[in-house]
Amino acid sequence: MVKILLVEDDPVIGRGLQINLSSRGFHIDWAQTLKQADVFIEDQVYDLILLDLKLPDGNGLGFCDQLKNEKKSQSPIIILTANIEEESAVAGFEKGASDYIRKPFGHAELLARIQNVLNIKSNKQGQLIFEKLVLIPEERKAYYDQQEIIFNRREFDILEMFLRRPNVVLSREQIISHLLESEDVIDRTIDSHLSRIRQKFKKNNANTIRISSVYGVGYKIEIA
Amino acid sequence: MVKILLVEDDPVIGRGLQINLSSRGFHIDWAQTLKQADVFIEDQVYDLILLDLKLPDGNGLGFCDQLKNEKKSQSPIIILTANIEEESAVAGFEKGASDYIRKPFGHAELLARIQNVLNIKSNKQGQLIFEKLVLIPEERKAYYDQQEIIFNRREFDILEMFLRRPNVVLSREQIISHLLESEDVIDRTIDSHLSRIRQKFKKNNANTIRISSVYGVGYKIEIA
DNA sequence: CAAAACTGTTGCAGAATTATTACAAAGCAA
DNA sequence: TTGCTTTGTAATAATTCTGCAACAGTTTTG
Image: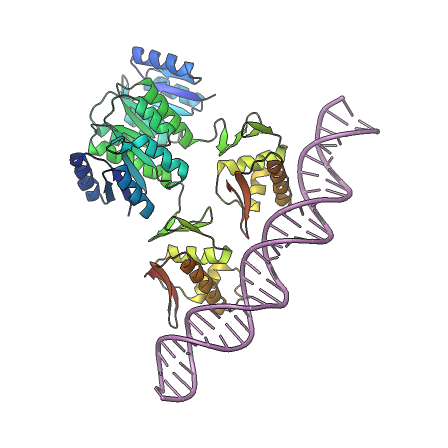
C-alpha cells in the first residue's frame, strides 16, 4: 500500500485529489494545515508527500526545508502550487523537493509525476515494511515508529527473513539453514535470538507487532 | 563538464536555450531534427537530453522510446512540449522520461529541473557531497567543512566508493573487488585503510560524519 | 491430572570480529 | 642510488556476538 500525505488547504482541490488518488489504490491522508501535517508525519511513514505551498499557517517551502533538514521524514515531496512565478519551483528543488507541478494540473499528469517519483525512490530498493517496523537491509538499519532499534547480525537476518514472509510460520530448521552455511547449530539457539529480539521490541514499545511461536512448528511475525 | 543534447526545431527557442544554458556552464549540442539527434547520440555520451516532442521528422515520444529500449543511450530525458494536453506528459513518463516541462517555461524552472534530474540520475558528475564532506573525484581532492584533507590513492578510492552509496553497508569483498582487479589481497587490509582514514578525519575534526563498522557485515559511512 | 513435549529467558565462556599499530616490501621522485 | 611515501600484512589488544546449557514456565496429550 502506497501511502501519500496530501497537504492542501483548499477543500475542493483536496477532496478531489483524495477521491481520485484513493481510487487509484493509494492511501491518502489529508492535512489542511502544516500543523496537521506535522501530526501525521510524527505518526506515519509516507511514501510521498504532496505539498501545497500556500497554507493558512505558513509557507510550504519552510516546511519542506524542515522535513529534509531535521530528518523528520525522508519521503520524497512533490510541490503543488498556484504560483505562476517560477521562483517557487526553483526554491522547491533547492529545499529538496523531488518534483514540482503548477496548478491547474490534470490528474493524469499528477499521477504520472507520482509514479515517476515513486519509481526513482524505490530504486533505492528494498525497504521492508511491516506495520510500523521498517528494515533497510542495505543499510542494516531498523526502525519502529521512526525510532531506530539496533539489532546485531543474527537478529537482523532473522527479522529480515520474517519480514520477507510476513505472517508465515518459519521452522527453526528453515531459519538456521537460511542463516548459516554450516547447519551444525542446535535449533534452540533460534529461541535465544528471538528472545533477544523480543526484548528489544519491548524496550522500544513495539507493541503492535509480535513474533509468536507456533507450538511444535516454528515462529511467525504478526500484528498484535 | 555537463553535456546536454538539446533537440528542438524552433530556432528561437533553441537559440535562446543554447545561449542561456551555455552561460550556466553546460555544454550544449543542438539538434533540430531527430535525424541530427541520432548522429549526436552515436557520437557522444550525454548527461541529459532535452527533447521537444513535435519535430519536423517525427514524434519525440517514439524517439524517446527508441533510446530507452534500444539502449542507444541511457541518458535521462526531459521532455519539452507546447502540448497543453497532458496525455503527452503521461506518455512521456511511460516511455522513460525523467521529467516533463510544459512550454512556456521560465529558464529558472528549467534549470531547476535540470539540476534535479542530474542529481538523481548520476553522482558520476562533479562533486560528491556527504554532509560537510566533499570529494571532487576529477581533482582527487577532499574537503571537510571547506578544509582540505589529503588522502592518498587507496583512501580516496574507498571514500569515493562510500560517498557514492551513503549509508549503505559495503563488505570488505565488495570494496576490494571494486578497488583492485586482482583480488589477491587479504580483506583485513581494508581495516588498515579505514583506520587511517579515520585518523585523518579526527585530525581534521570531521566529527559529524563517521565510518562505522557493522559487525560481521562490513562498513558504512554515516552521519554521526 | 500427570507426564511429555515444547517454549522462554538468562548467564556466560569462548568464538568471532574489529581497531590499531608496527613493520617491511613496493613504488616513486629526485 | 637515496630518501620519502604508500600499501599490504601480521601481531596484539580490545570488543562484541553467539551458541549452549540450565532451569523455569507453558501447552499438549494420553
